[in-house]
Length: 116
Image 1 (cartoon, rainbow, N blue to C red):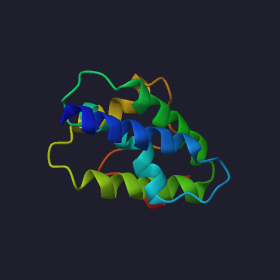
Image 2 (image 1 turned 135 degrees about the vertical axis):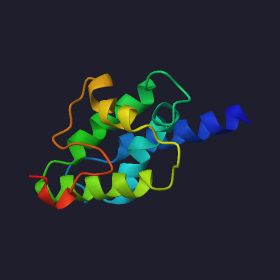
Image 3 (image 1 turned 120 degrees about the vertical axis):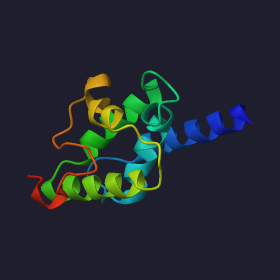
């Protein structure tokens, strides 16, 4: 079963890398980029996987405009609401742990409409 889950996560990570900056950003893109981060964000892993950090880097490139950043923020908040065991500290520290600071904060309380 673990092998199937790993294969699915790998496929999602690879599909995230196919999305190009300049394409219209949507929640599917955001979710694909961050799916490999779920194990870290739920405390199942102590550090984000390389595929997770690649997704964070890709997300930063995709969220180039104010409207893209606001959309990405809302998508992340929506996705996080589906997981009861998301670790808020892990979410906040994810960009730093990946060495890719995002131009917007990620947490459940942020007002996405105020992101520049």
